[in-house]
Structures are given as C-alpha cells and as structure tokens.
Picture (cartoon, rainbow, N blue to C red):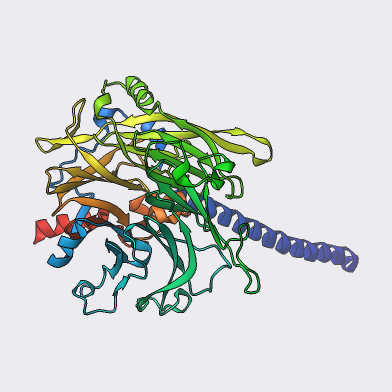
Length: 537
C-alpha cells in the first residue's frame, strides 16, 4: 500500500514538480516578452514625444501677437556669422556686370565674365588668389553666359564618374558639361578632399533661339527644365545614340521641348511665337508629390503635375488671386492686418516637407516679410490616384520688426524690403535691403524650447548686418537642406533639442557682390555655451 499509494503520490508530485517548472519557465518567458513590449512601447512614446507637432496644427492655434518668444536672454540668436570670404578687387570690378551663383553640392561658386565661366572652391582660402588648382575657367565658346546650374544626370547615360551635369546657358546655346572629381565619391574616405574638379564636354547642346534662360530646375531622376524670360518652361531631353547611327530630325541626341505651349509649337522657331507671358522668377519641385510650382514676376503661381512616375507634365492651373486669398486669411485672424496691394510681391517660394506638415505644401515670402502658407489640394484622377489640382492660402504670418528690443508684428507699411529668401526645415532666411549698398539678413526659426509643449508656433528671430548686397542663398547639403528632396528621416529631425548632438550645425551661404558670407544655425546647446561663457568668463 505504501508503495502503491506513495508511488502515485510521488509520481504526481514529480509530475507536479515538472509541471510547476514548465509553468514557471513559460511565465518567465511571457513576462520577459511583456517587459520588452512595454519597454519598446515606452521608447516609441518617448520618440513620438520628441516629434514636432504638425506645422498646420501649430499655426491654427497661434495668436499672431504671441507668435514670437519673449524670453529674457541677453541676446536671441537664430543665425550666427562665422566667416566671410571676400572677392579680389579685380574680380569685383568684373562681376558687377556679370552673373554669379552658388553650387553647394560641389562646394563651388560660379561667376561669368562675358563668355568665360569661372568656378572656385569657396572652402579653399587660396583658390581666389589663383595659386590653387581649385580655381578653373571654362571658355570653350564665344557667347555671353547668363545662367549656370548643377543637375543630376539621367542614370545610365554617362560614365559612373560623371556625378553631375553643369548646365551653361548663353544667348544662343545651352551646353551640358559633365562634372567629375579626381576622387570618386565611392572611393572617398571621411575627411578626405575630393581633389580637383573636372569638366568634360559631352557634345550635347540645344539652341535657345534667342530666348533668355533665367534659371534651371531639375528632378532627382535627371529631368532638366529651363525657366525663361518669355514665361515658358522648356525641357531638355537627351539620350545615347549608337556610334553606327546618325543623328537625324527625329533622333537628335539632345532636344529642347516647349512644355508651356501646344505640341505643334515645338516645330515653330521661338522667335516666330506670338505668345508672351510674364517672366518666370523661380521654379521649385516637390519630389514627394511629383508637383512643380512656377512663380511668375507678377506673383502668380502655376501648379504642374509631373505624373505618378515623375515623367509627365500636366498644367493644373495658374493662380492669380493669391493676394485676395492672403487678405481673406488675415481677416480670419484675431488681430487685423493689412497687405498693401501696391507692395505685394512674392520674392521666393519653397516646398514644405511632409515631416513638417501633412496639410501644408508651399511657403511664399513677400517683399514686406509676410509668409504665406499654401496647401496643394488633391483629387482622385483615374489610375494616378490623388493628383494635385489646386493651390489655396491657408495661413498668413505677418513679419516682425524690432521695437525697444522686443519683436512685434507690423500691421501695415513697407517696414522691411525683402528681395531674396530661403526656407527649409523650419528655417526662414531673408535678405532685407537697408540701403543701396548693403543688406541685413533676418533669420526666423521655431523656438526649440517651446515648440513641442506650447502647442502653437513660437518662433525666434535675429538680424545680422551684411557687407554688401545679397545675390542668392544656399545651404550646405545636409539632411535639413532643401536639396534633401523631402528625404528627411523621421519627425524627430525638426526638434533640435532631440537631435542637436546627432547632426552638425546647419550652414547657410550668402552670395553677395563683395564675397560669400558663411552663417550657421544656432542650436540650443550653442546658446547654453554662450550663456555659460558670458557668465563664467
């Protein structure tokens, strides 16, 4: 009995022990999974908490008179002047009657003197003294150059060494030059110099037919658009023709197509065209929505859809009522503001990334410093799905001036005269004309300390005097810059408190008639460093 009775008991006991062990192991594993899941959830919550709120939601809850931080710091900085590279005296005399610009993707600036194109590495302090290989001149044609731009090549057409195409426009011809460096980017070691810049003749060019090219826009896939003084947009298309084949009427290696006119107009010489439009001031492309925005000299904006695959060109409409839309938006604000129609002029447009807002797509800066936030409404159109069809002003942010050391909004009058502007990832940079000889640069950016928890958009700003007149802005390529084409990572990027130690400071370049000014975006940690240095010595 003892054996029988005890055996089942021990057996049950053993089974119970084994069952108890298995249950404990399962419970431990379940607990671990639960803890890991909880930890992951907490990390996700913290990361989500670091994301900036949607710009449109912040603007909607912002009272204009409270839109700028009124902190007690001795000096609020958004931009800080770092250095200035002056042009040589002999070059200063020559470029006053020529064209200049910046090519930040390759760390070069360009200038023209008649038919000669000069390129110099602005990071090399000796290049302008002509004792460095980083200064070069291209003069393989005899026409006056009026526009230069850098674009990505169509994949598979050129050798891998050709990283960019340099578009050089004259009064008679537009040339495509290959751009390469001694050390390809694939072989580059961090901190290593790329070596000398090299230009290659591609044998590709198109006639301008007397049309003046004002600027060039391009896509990541290599499409090239010429923005011209006659108000038309022309696309340059090029291809590889086999050696055995001959170039003919329908098999040209490089062609120019008028995208602003009916198809038959491409067979009519440009000088014979009887249509005339306002000059194009600027063209920007939103790669995330395959949309193109064309700013004309009369402050109207045209919307163009590039198709689901980015290869189309559908003109959706030209919007001439932006002033009335802006006035209507201001009338809905708690404090009444007024835009003088006689002073209304849009000087710059920039795209707004999806990380900043899912509703806002474009920002337009006026000559008096007003910021117009626009949405590109979309509609379903067949297989393309949602297609941009309309532009609407959703919000207008008035400009600021300094009054007794505190920023306030102006209600009327041309207190500022903005003639150039740049925007990317929340940062606005504007050139304000203070005299015929000099500008000041105004920087505006969200207050990192109040941006997340405040709910409404709270910004800081400062002004820096310049040593000349502004001819253009550019930003050193980074994950923040407009050249990122909307590929910005996650929403934490725009929160400087969360990412200021992950990325270098943003660098803004200002091309002037006297040289290049280098400014940096001030981060919260930079402000803390300055305060400690001022207090502790």
